[in-house]
Image (cartoon, rainbow, N blue to C red):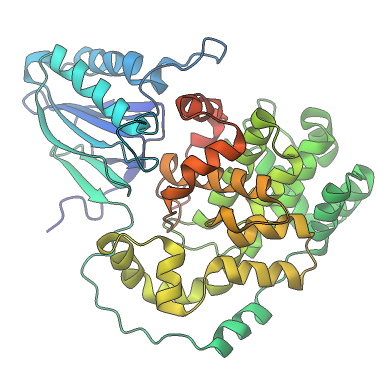
Length: 449
């Protein structure tokens, strides 16, 4: 029987660790390319879990936060465990994560960000004479590193594992998919209005503010989103007018669009979502990272990149009901056959969320520039109308799947990464710097269990 079953969980996000004495609690980190470490002294009953983003700082110009890097954070984590009462000579470690960000060759090891982080972790533990009792690193798929604070046992499990559940799944017909597209909840008119304003570079904030203030539901969602940890506003926002003052018109534009889109995504832990709200939070964080990368690379308008990131997975909302019924089957195909998500979707359902997303975008008359990243964020080489934006969304989605595992069911084809880096003007040795430029708020806990 699983000793963790029924126990409260606390998720550790990138750049954080928790050290504890015995407690009725399970610590868990969802790891892709990030690396997780547990340290335990079972005699003293002291232990902790640490979630590491990168191996070491990438640029002196980036504000330094020691806990995000193995080189500075791991020694501090070891000291914290010992300061809590553990004996350094009795400590035992487990390591997990460090999935590959892209295909590797002998000539180019720069893409193995997780491998380098795992290597730094191993060297520090060896130097401090702390034995590693379990280590599962590498590969292309994520895992969960779990520490039980009652027994101080560590376990490593695949992300989103459905267990040994048999599936009796009837493939939906073309008519079923067509009906799902036609009956999906439409996105609000205010969202479409903002999308067109952004596309036309015509920002009429007073008009949007009036509409939001007259809609109590959207207004409440906007204010809640403004005050969320993901956005990271220090001063509390209690009105749309105050939001304009503190955030600025363009940023508020983005958050109104996000709040309007939120109900469109299924809320529960089902189908594509691996946690409550997983689909929306993946899309929101992808939008924020896409905006950041657009500024860094100058390959797309940041506002348009934000919108593309927010909308790239809209197709999942329409066919989520079928994923819910066939989730174990999808999981097996991606785990055992190493197929990416859209390949598994095509095999199981005869369509993909990218194809469905394109049909929804066309049905809603979304600007053509945004249809490419919705249609081809898994296959950026097929984009014709907005190739730069599509490659940027592909890279953003890949970064999210690797460094924010555990929000949704997804698996991208990593083979497009070298071409993507070339198209976006990022050399492979600068990729860790791009990861380091991702807004830190992206890594805060957004799980709503």
